[in-house]
Image (cartoon, rainbow over all chains, first blue to last red; front, side, top):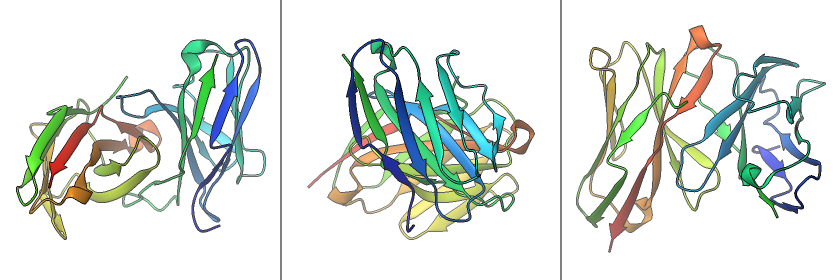
Amino acid sequence: GAGVSQTPSNKVTEKGKYVELRCDPISGHTALYWYRQSLGQGPEFLIYFQGTGAADDSGLPNDRFFAVRPEGSVSTLKIQRTERGDSAVYLCASSSFGGLDTEAFFGQGTRLTVV
Amino acid sequence: SQQGEEDPQALSIQEGENATMNCSYKTSINNLQWYRQNSGRGLVHLILIRSNEREKHSGRLRVTLDTSKKSSSLLITASRAADTASYFCATLRQAAGNKLTFGGGTRVLVKP
């Protein structure tokens, strides 16, 4: 597609439920990032994929969070047993793995609200 | 944890004035990037400066990088109301697997 697409744009869920957030990166981009952003804060790194594998998942806050990218394109961020503190905007970005001049292209984010 | 810290956290200026914001970081980097965000959603890449560069220009944007002080500045000249947004610096370290790490941002308000 023309840009990074994230669905849904908004998600309201009840505490304790399971949610999946989807990211469609720019075609051909091998690198994919997930970030979480709370109001008034900068994006907080969650996980980085290079191809199908998670190159760095050090930002995942706990084992309720998991992300996959089985075919090296679309990625899904999965959150189990959601808590109110998980409420935030979840941002996805992709980039081509081209060395030191690689900029990241961001989607519009999914606003997750846990009630 | 956040690698970069922006200063000031918020900035209010009149249209036509220049806006300057600073970013400090903690570890060695390969490049530093500035992004803009409107209305708390998607970020837009503005400019990238490599660690071996000291200054870069793009339109009304001027970025400097001082690796000895681990700091960068973003200057927006002749600001417009449409420049109202949050601005974030992000650092990339190949040693950290090309992870892009963001600071807390500067919220800029340009008054017409």
